[in-house]
Image (cartoon, rainbow, N blue to C red; front, side, top):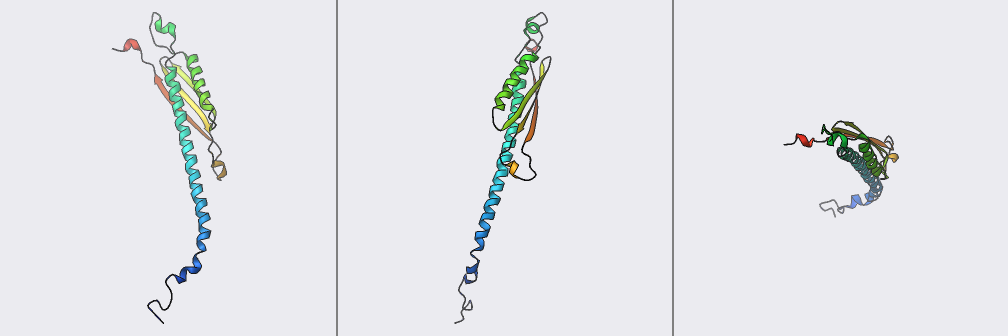
Length: 157
């Protein structure tokens, strides 16, 4: 009986090909897990950069609150910031970020120039899965710099 298909059942030619899918599934799982690991590490590195930038902004802003009282309340009445107090606050902020296990060697330096503060912060971010990928490092150094200026209240209208 030669019907339309020449006597061959529909799908009969594919019956011996079903086992090929079993070889493709583990390869697809490995590829998906590898991409997920890259996405995870990329997100951790981005978060590390943002947190160090936030640390620099907080250190610079906080340092503008430490006035040298003799200069401000004295005869001249000028705004002069206290370098030592600002640096102490920056170190305290850096220490709090350094408690996070994803960061190492967190440091923050401030430079005071009269009423302006520049904060430079650095840290080492450790990705979770990057050491297992060939060619990727086990640590990434990130840095940020922020500037804040204390306003002179005498100059305000």
